Length: 184
Image (cartoon, rainbow, N blue to C red):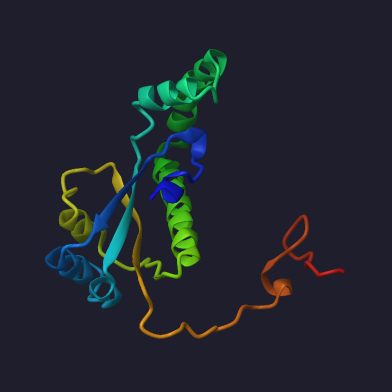
């Protein structure tokens, strides 16, 4: 988990909430909230990555930790204390999107860490949000958005490489349409 929560986030807000679902009944309920996808019950644990769209409001612990570690100065804290509310308020309805991005970055760190330990992951983007929130005990939290579900365990069989498009199909230089080409 330490590698997961070491993920960067906007203004270091760490506005993700990570729920480890291990109980078999909880996994079954979570699977049902994800249209019966079996990997949730097959894996020993499924991580639910949620994003707190209002997590930016209480920044005290973030400031205290950064100051204590010597990573931020009082001047930095003063700047962030002014900039964060202005930025978040200006986002308006995009606040959810930004919080979900932060949670997804943390989920990516989990997947990379799991892979380095020989585990397999299955990032999932298909569920009924209200049902997932009910399973994890967050039905009454309208500011919580479900970002990703990630079952983790040892694969029953090696994953087949489905291949990737050539870089020229989706990587561009400076602007869309200017195809990237590999050079030596």
